[in-house]
Length: 139
Image (cartoon, rainbow, N blue to C red; front, side, top):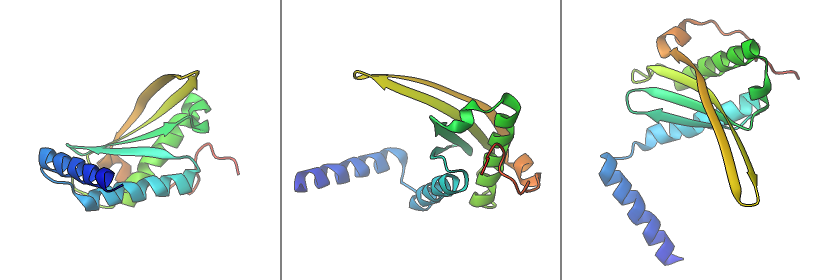
């Protein structure tokens, strides 16, 4: 047990040194965003903020991937707008992308297909009004 904790601490230290340092505030913000998306849309999402201010939100095996193309685009735009609102006036956020990933596995083999077809600038999303509805969600 102690060996694994030391190993994990060493890996974190190595990654921290390699990347400069870990901004724990940013990591917490992303975790809060993922939790908020899950709560709002009842679909878990992976969020990633790359250097250069590109936020990517990926839904895996989501019911929203099966929406009609126009409804799926509307849903993706609403999620992107929601993410920008959750993150606040973060100067470093430039672009928000929303995508879908389908993963299936059989007998130890896994196949995955990902697409990230939707992208908006953060500035554009900040100007969109809150629609007050969640696209594609039937309660």
